Structures are given as C-alpha cells and as structure tokens.
Image 1 (cartoon, rainbow, N blue to C red):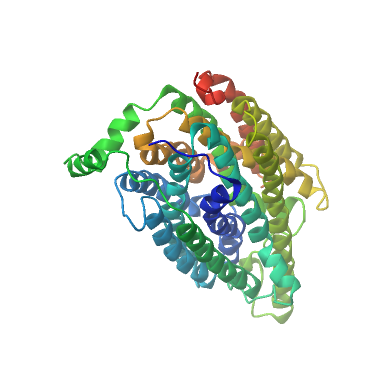
Image 2: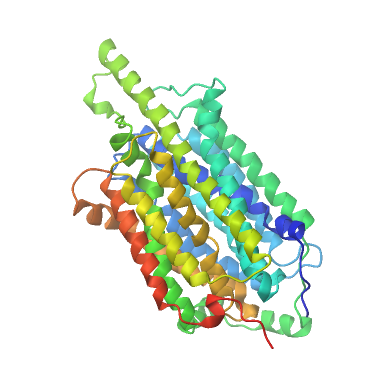
Length: 456
C-alpha cells in the first residue's frame, strides 16, 4: 500500500495525544520524589522507590507492541484502542496518587500510573512508522518531540502556577500540599482529553494483506517465544543504538529521581526536614518543622519550574527541527551526538550555578531531551521490518528501562557515592553519562539510519 504524504495538521493530530502522555510523565518525573519525601522517604531510598517505572516499562511495552501489531478493528484501528485504555487508567492514577496517606501506597500508585502510561505511549511510536513514509519519519518523530516539550513545560509549572493562584503549599507532616493535588487533577483531565483528540481525528491504514494478517494471528506461537526470537535477531543498528540509549536514560532517570533532593539541598539550601529531628509535641519544634517544610515545598515548586524549562527548550529545538526536516534531510547521528553533549554540560554546571542560573542548565538538558525523543526512533524505524514495528519499538524500550532498573537498584547511589555523600553528585554522574552517550554515536555506521536515503 502506497502511503501518501501527510500535511502538518494531520501529523499534529496524530501526535497530539503525546501532550497528555507527557503531562503524566512530567508530573511523575518532577514531583513523585517530592511526594515520597513528604511521606517520609530519605533521599537514599528514593531511587529504589522509583523502580516501578522501569520495571513496568520492561514488561508492558513489548507486550503492548506485540498485541497492537496483531490488532485490527475497522472502527478503532490498530494502535488507537491501546491509547484509549491507557489514558483512562492513567487519568485515574494521576488523580489519586497525591492523596496517598502512606509511602507504600504512593509507590503502588506509581506502579499503576507508569504501567498505564506505557500502554498509551508505546503504540504512539509505532503509529508514526505506520502512517508516514520513510522520508517523513524524522519529521513525525520530531513533531512528537515538539508536543512533548509543550507538555513538559506546562505540566512542570502546574504546582507553581496553582500556588501563585492562592492555593496553599503548606500541609501537615506527611500530607501532600493542595497545590500538588490540584496540579495532578489537572494533569489527569488533560491526559484523557488529548488522547481522545488523537483517537477521533486520526485514521489508520489496514494491514496490506488482510488474509495473511489473519493467518499470522491464528498461529499458535506464544508472544513470549516471538518476543524472545526477535530479541535474538534484532538488527545490528538497533543494538548500537541500545548503547546510546543505556547511558542517555541512566542520566535522565537520575535526574527524575534525585533532582529534587539534590537541587533543593545544594542550589536552594532548603533540604527536606527530617521529622525525627524535631519534637513534634513541642510547639516551638513543630513551628520550626512547619517553617522548614514550607520552605522545602516552595523550593520544590521552583525546582519543578526550572525542570519545566527543559521541556520548553526541547520544544524550541524540536520546532527548529520540524521546520528544517519538513524540507531537508539531517544527519541524525551528529545532531544526536552534539545534543547529548550539551545536555551533559548542563548537568555538570549544576554544581556551580545559583537558583537564578539553574534554568540555563535545563535549557541545555532540554536540547538533549528533544534529541533523545526523536533521533533514536528515526534511526531505528529505518532499520526494522515494518510488519513488526510495534514489537521492535517495544523491544527497543529494553534499552530504556534496563539502565533505569540498574540505577534504581543501587547504581546511582553507588556511582555517585564514589564522588562523595552530597546529593548533587548524582547530577554530576548524569552529566558524565550523557557525555558517554554522545560519544557512543560513533558506533552508528548504517547510512540509512544516519539519514534518509531516497531510492533511485
């Protein structure tokens, strides 16, 4: 089946659901550690509490990719049913997570939230490859990145914005402030509405050979054996991209899990107060705790807003790439290398910046983020069998979640501990990891992956 060239608004519509997905990820990435700290978690415990995110991705994405490859509905298409199911579950989890009364409940909600987001997210990657010609794929993935940047910036600023509108940042010990609760409720609404917009404005191509498609569905091979077989036979370029992804996502998981404790402590000088250090039966001690806790919550709002800048700069970077790739090819390899290197520099500069300067670090990190969300997928989509695009996109997620699992199980604490006990050392490790990821682009040699190669 010959695919037609799509216009800007058609690609925008099919990508718009990523706005909601990124609202979910940005609220999770920017504020789950804050919720954990509010409920009493120490900074050394936080990476392990985050293990839900990569584990659910490791399990969910290959399965959803496999299932969506083998799904077809004349009304709902191939990928859209999964968008919708994931959106409903994610919205419910987003709404309730800041109401968690105990740490273990918040950790459980993170499992549910991340699994649900992954159900929606994985098919979006495959949809770009399904709908767009080879010449438009970089354009399509960059468009997704543009929308992701918008979502990251807006969602990361929600608690600050809600606070500025008069909602309190103060709360009793072990209670998440109302500003965060309202921000998560807004995120739940945006998640569902944006997914519905894509579901109802986007059509999908049916399988090219319906009879063959139905025969393949009836084959008795289990999805486990199919996935294992495809892992063993993944293309060489995919394996090389996996090395880049490993160091890239180790860095960003480190940021999501430890930026709040690291930056509130090192840059803002307002670490989370430890309740056991205060006699809460003493009125003066209780007032001192409340004062420090409110200062920590406000500093956390500022950290969230600063992190939102990386969404804004990734959006601007993606917009430039959208304008350029709509007309011309780019060298994906060198764009990705330079972008990751700039992000690494942003993390390293956190050691020396003031609160006012922190946003410049996140501008650099945003350039790396914009590239991470587009260039590897554009390179991958040129290297795999289109009939197995969903499965390979899901398998590719292994190279995202495995470094996060390693980080959560003690990798961050161990490596950053080599530099000292200060929480800011985790951001230094993130910077070094991104620099290694940038240099790893030298491994990519496939010309079709590096740049679109028109046929004669």
